[in-house]
Length: 465
Ligand SMILES: *Cc1c(COP(=O)(O)O)cnc(C)c1O
Image 1 (tube, rainbow, N blue to C red):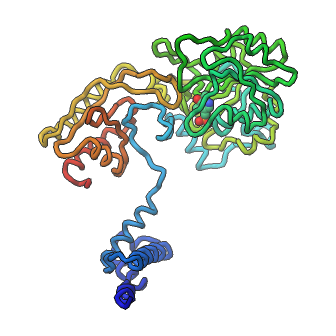
Image 2 (image 1 turned 180 degrees about the vertical axis):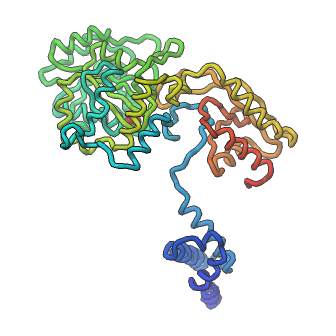
Image 3 (image 1 turned 90 degrees about the vertical axis):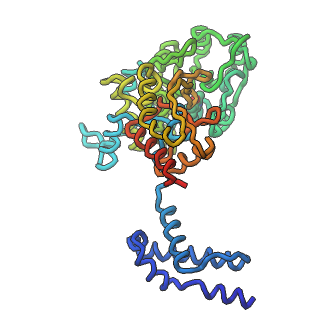
């Protein structure tokens, strides 16, 4: 007991630590109240450790070192740039789509200044944020009208709430989709206040299943794009034209959650992501889709289609809670301008990454050459073909033939290397295949190669422990 009292008294006072902190270049620059709170946190930690029977080093030098570590941890942005070396183009955990230069320029302009967010320059009166992208989306998809909200989940929720609350919505059992992050169609329908009427079976749903389910209380038929899985083999869904005819004969709309909703046709083998335009032309009344998947903008969701249904949605009380913010809106408008004015496959990063066929081998060889001097130290660096994926709930089951650099170190396992790269100054996210680190070059952006080379050379020099 007496020993504990003595040990506790040995913890330096905050004033003493402040004097010591003045000698540290890093700590001396911190605002006084922040520095004091860091030092308090450090001394409290060792006090608690002593009381629980541990024997921490309570010397001023040790405490100052802890303070530097803690202050760095606390002030490091948590949301940081990473290098995506996984080859997964739409990696939801890594922020989905990086923005195009044009989108980025508009975001910067709007973020740093006042803007026309809800101001009509013609009249000098209040305008609405939802008008900015309507004409552009119409040009690109043929939609009569559209409404942009926070994300696609919000677009689906708003659409169902506005059209089907308290009434029935018919959906095929083959399309009761779950997307990562707890978006499940049955749960969203329930949240909207609509009553879900399931029809058909997992593999087959016929026109007659839909027809028999229609009642005076039916508000709509919901179709859901199976964006992250495929049902193959003995399967059936009714022809679009027949389903549209059925719905319209009963005066109800067809709503389709497209998920990734691309504006340009993207095809791999027999798998094609339907474009927004194709689905509207097929007679679907309203489609909903994400803006940060195949479209390549920031987080947002769109409901596009017939004005008749959208007019009411634009006055719905939920809209305020689901509204898009100005930075996402700027990212979307800038990206739509790329589709209208540029070449999406060159200008929009995710479109470029998904469609690139030429040049990946060349890029992998260039990167391998830059890393070649590691071979003097016993490393193995080999440019080779690899497989990448679209990700983000698009093109399920499709592997994109890609190129990468496979790397092994003489004294570290692939798992150790993966961790070093992930915990580096600019984290590099990689895959391990057969005990090798794979740097897939498909998703590398400007500046990434240099970061990768610096990281590997630092690991070799032992600068990263
Ligand atoms: C991705 C996806 C969603 C969710 O979209 P967010 O923009 O992430 O909210 C909903 N439905 C389908 C079919 C999807 O693929």
